[in-house]
Image 1 (cartoon, one colour):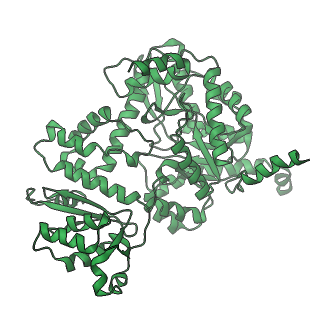
Image 2 (image 1 turned 45 degrees about the horizontal axis):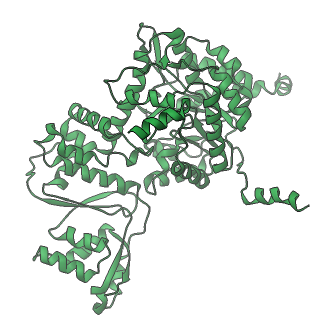
Image 3 (image 1 turned 90 degrees about the vertical axis):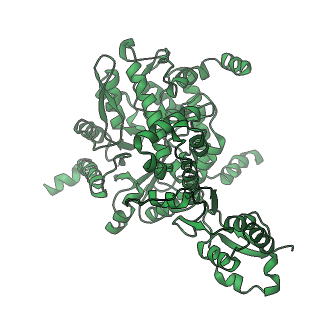
Length: 267
Length: 308
């Protein structure tokens, strides 16, 4: 802190205008910077407030653009109040706003007015993963024939190359059902929020698709994505979920475009 | 002898990129993805499209596919919004590299940025914030523009800001500041006529006088946009550069005066929130094109004599 203050003092006027102008932008308790004025030295409270408003509203809008289902669930007024608290505590540190809001799900988890919606943070996690998938690098979906041509005795040693868009979000709540219901315009029937659901997010071409993974599917795919062999991933999934259906999961992951390619692993 | 060859060799290694200028005399609009289908259905256009650079800095997916689609048949202008050229701290090198790479990939007809800042220390404020006009800030802005132009190997157009406050420490006028930047860096200018109108109303100066002082010979693009009305602490009119509606009549008049003086400079209508259906935005560009075309004809007196 002392070092920072020292740096400001020695760097002088080169930093002073931005240093004085910045802090009140996201802090309503700080007064208008004394360095600015209206014409002929007129006070500039409302004038400076235009900047406060631009910054605050545009960053809330940026979060609303990343988290539309969260906003639909909470209502606009609740969402904007929650988002305002978040942007003041954690403003963006990159000019790329589609990267903003990574800490928002954890913020929602701690936000006292959202405690009656314990599943809300997981909906946000799916929405954040959705946007990451949307902007991820392009990749060609692995052809089903690629797997069909592998000799049976080598199947267990296969490793897969994940598509850059692939994401998995695990939830103790019915996050996929709640997410899907709130990304449409249609009215929503009753949902049992207490049923755990894991989400698979993929983007084989341009459209992002969110799927509900079967039991054991998340462990299976997470192992494969981290580079473990098909044999080890299947064993991990079966250990966690004895009823895990490996054939259906392999067919499902190929159809969803989770991977771009496969290689024969070390074994 | 050897020494005389060296600069040429260095020049060949880093060629300056001056693409042909296919936007001369044209009017265009902001490119919004929701308009893509309607634009493609209309077929080849006579205008051009401008995108905010940062929206195309993701790795892949729909944004790049949409820009590639629009780029096939139309000139594109890349408009940077958050380089923070007007800030006191060094430019963000990673962001500059993303910008350079985007310009290289899409070879836009025009490249522009703002006389403003948006990042301080590590916080990005997502707004175009104002700066004082002093010898110190002038030197810093010029260094930043040099750095951008060296990175992308071509000159940029620098946009005049709309502002709501002035700085007590300013020692020169905005037009003197901008003229000095042009002289020192060789950059061109993006004249935002709506920004001139908004700032003139907010600071009580004459928009026409500002334009007389502005180095119009260096303007490579014009921006038009809508603004909103509020009031300041004394209840006086305060205009907000909102980009959320049609261009105001008074801004059209100023635009026609500029075009009358300068000829048909490429002109872009911005519309960034409350975005209307494509035909409404297109109509704004058609209105701008009509003014450009009128002054193209006036610029050729021999032809009009022959026709008469």
